Amino acid sequence: MTSTHNTTREPVVGAPVDRVDGPAKTTGAARFAAEHDLAGLTHAALVTATVSRGRIIGIDTSAAEALPGVVAVLTHHNAPKLNPPKRVSLVNMSTMISGTQVNYLNTDEVHWDGQPVAVVVAEHSHAAREAAALVEVSYERLPATVDFAAELPNAVLDKGNML
Image 1 (cartoon, rainbow, N blue to C red):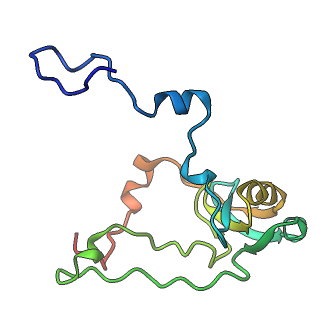
Image 2: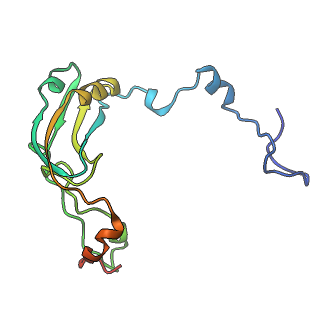
Image 3: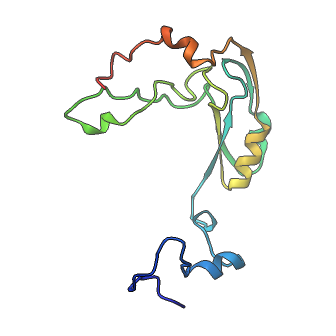
C-alpha cells in the first residue's frame, strides 16, 4: 500500500489514492450504518403528493396498516401538531436557520408535488417502503402557479423575518 501523504512535490489532484475500505466495499463485505440492527429501531418511509397543488379529499391507509411490521401510519388525521417556527431573534441564533411555515402532516393542503402527505413507520425499512406504496391518496386538484417570474409581482415579504 502506498502512502496517501504527499511528501514530494508531485501533483496531488488526479493522483491515485489508496482506500483502506475499498476491498470491503467492492466485495460486499462492508457493513453500512443502515445494516446494523438496533433493538427498538424503527424505520420511516414518506408518502408524497402527486399533484402540484390541491387538497387531500381522501386517504386510505388500511392496506398499509395491515402489513406485518407496520407500527404506525401518520397523516393529517392523526399526526401530532407541530410547533410553529420560532420568531427570528438576534439573541437566539438558532432562530436564524431557515424553516418552513408549512405544517407537514397537519393540514390537508398540498403546496407542491412531492410534499410529504403521510409517513409510514415500521420495524424494517423494506416494510416501511412497501406499506408507503399501499397508501392511497385522493386529491382535489387546485390551480398551480409554476411560473416564478409571472408571480413575482404577487410576492409578499415574510413580515416575521428580519432577514
